[in-house]
Image (cartoon, rainbow, N blue to C red; front, side, top):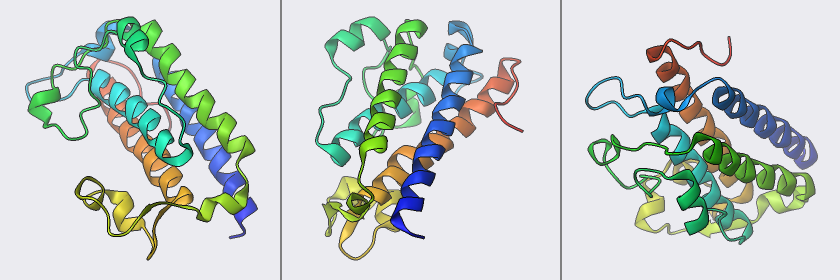
Length: 189
């Protein structure tokens, strides 16, 4: 597929996925987001915070721009655990809660807006730029993106597709399932 078509597809897919998060947040309240169905089950708050915070951090690897998340956002959003939880166990993250859902919604939308603006200005030739070379460090070597990577390493295209898009869809699936636990419908048919 020509690079321009790939980039156009990425732009549309990212906006569509972001709209699912917008719709989910617009149709849930704080109790639903923080509900934990049973022991060993993560709340929607985990999937939301984890994905937003990982997306924010991954954007730095792709662009070199500092993450949006900082002490000011932490004070506003009030997560129970100030950690995306990537390297933690389920047992360590079951208590994740969001304190202020409106502030969180502003944070995730800021992350999404920045990504969408970057994708609109991204040159298709930049999709092949390697952002992490082989051999991968241990924290990268065990990831899905390491399995996807080509000989030279993880490219911008790999990062956008794995870290932002596929990761976001994975957690949206969790959110859709968890919505059924609190009496809400899924986001798509």
